[in-house]
Image 1 (spheres, helix red, strand yellow):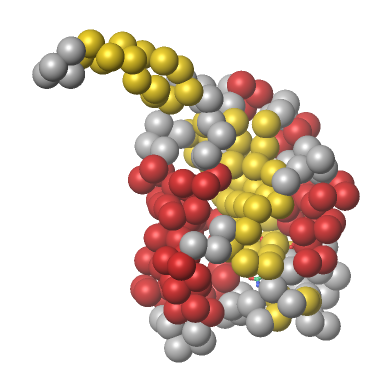
Image 2 (tube, protein in one colour):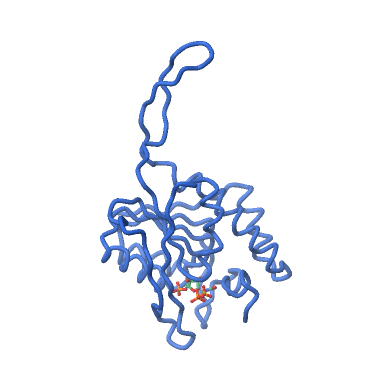
Length: 209
Ligand code: PRP
Ligand code: URA
């Protein structure tokens, strides 16, 4: 069964409060989303494989732990997931980046796929899907299904804010996927927006309406 981890570090909560504020403009919003993603990367990568290596310090030879070199991929769900990529790459610079384009139809709230470009060896990589918002869960469910269809096996989902409905939906459809979220909010409103949420993440990141 997939784990659901809330990452409630004070630095993350502080930045999330600023992100939620409707008076925060696109420039600050983008920087804050990137910073929160970078801080969350610490927890999301907590269980990556390590190997023992020998290192010669100025004093003697010793055994140390280093990342085993298992390959990773970061896969943002376009558009809003893009806002988290640079923060992740600061911590995992060797990761490859795939892109899945999905938008939520405003009437039906169903995700519509328009783009998919993944690293060729996605089957061999540990995959981290990024999207700031997990609302009904439809977009993340479709993105993860697409990744599985392409052969990805070890998939994690990383979001800033989630509705309880979205978390439940992922756990039901993809119980093997671990979910990392800064905060789980109260509910969805009648338009499928997260309450209290932060509004439309893509529009706030890119200054569109
Ligand atoms: C937003 C968000 C998620 C999706 C969440 O994207 O970034 O991808 O909605 O909703 P769901 O859990 O109900 O599927 P949107 O469709 O607005 O596209 P955008 O990122 O291009 O703005
Ligand atoms: N997508 C967003 O960007 N925000 C929400 O609250 C729900 C879906």
